[in-house]
Length: 146
Ligand SMILES: Nc1ncnc2c1ncn2[C@@H]1O[C@H](COP(=O)(O)OP(=O)(O)O)[C@@H](O)[C@H]1O
Ligand SMILES: [Mg+2]
Image (cartoon, rainbow, N blue to C red):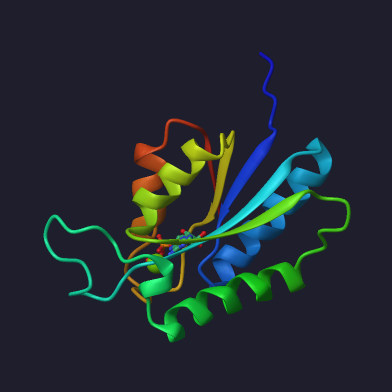
């Protein structure tokens, strides 16, 4: 079959796992001449988001959260060799796995790349919950990087 990988979406949460995912995503983008999207989703603190309410806009979020998100993206962009790779950073707000699936759809991604583990410490969990949900729910391939 033809598999044109034109857009690769990487989930970035500041963890070592997501940094490794971003390295793989960038390497693949280079090989395939694909566009690389680096997306970080901030989950609003409990209470920001009443039942049935809409998530706060980034503008309404606390400066600390938004700055944290920008820092996470800046760090990963600094770390990667993106010379010659078309790339975008995306800041989003909401439930991480839900938003990553929506972003993949909105941007027409052909592949999602994530770390096996993320920034939440739960040593007993083998696969993180965002990774677990994405691998179960995505209707495009998901590359899970150890
Ligand atoms: N808020 C987020 N925004 C973007 N990507 C995320 C986010 N949370 C997790 N991910 C992606 O999912 C991977 C697995 O993280 P996760 O399932 O949350 O594991 P953990 O429970 O160890 O935090 C991360 O390496 C990252 O690629
Ligand atoms: Mg996590």
